[in-house]
Image 1 (spheres, protein in one colour):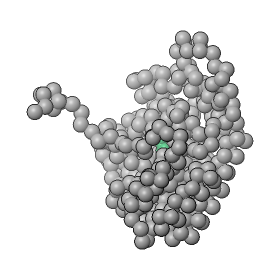
Image 2: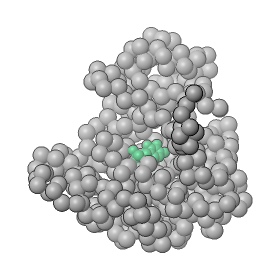
Image 3: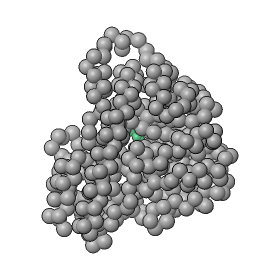
Length: 351
Ligand SMILES: *Cc1c(COP(=O)(O)O)cnc(C)c1O
């Protein structure tokens, strides 16, 4: 029997991230990380950082990084919010903006952290089914709701919405906050940034974990109107003034300031994705069109968990979700060309 205090503890089913095996020999295609290192300027910051600076608290407002991001997106620094990874930013945004009695809405197949936050913050929600090709039907989003969150491109499907579609979504949802989670937008998606001018209720969340190769550093940010950003700041400053540390702020700024390197590795990931998608189709896989750094695939004659297990034995980790509608699919992160060749060889042997 549990002691009585145990009955008073919070019970919750947490989000479970992809496995992080601590081995250099495995090919890790299970967490949508970038196979390339961060911009050279990041290494330079780490090499030259003076530890004495750590004796002081960081700039709670992250002004230098906000300026760099504002310049990158053509916004004011007051339109930028910083967080400890975009999961931190999203969790704060859920708490800050989804306070209605009406349910918030999002696709039935999507980032599996959303229901966890709804549960944690006791936010009512309703999921809206994607069609059989994993596309969003925008008309589903026309009804009154407590808020909207849509990843663009969506995860784990990789499918993206056009700027016109995003504009349509915003035009029909002006009485609530609409969050577009752009974790993968740099791999060929269409960003909602141009819509910020028109829609004060639009919050765009991006991360440096994927396209900027900084998953281990934990940097995410939101872009939006001053009204939304001020609210996020107030909520953040109500639980922890210092979410971003001095070293992270400096390294992330170096990453943002190297636009050429950023463009170059995004292009490389996209080229590898297209080549891999073609090779997988030749092997009989059905591959969803992807605008992200992963492929969502299924094989009409082979069992997804069995492929997953076989690859794992070969030291190749991909992601399998035992969830309704997608339990016959695998999500495969785009690695280097060499890594994808190893994956394709393993799949050829298996089939
Ligand atoms: C990876 C991911 C995030 C979170 O990334 P962080 O590492 O916390 O910045 C958020 N949304 C989606 C859809 C993701 O796939």
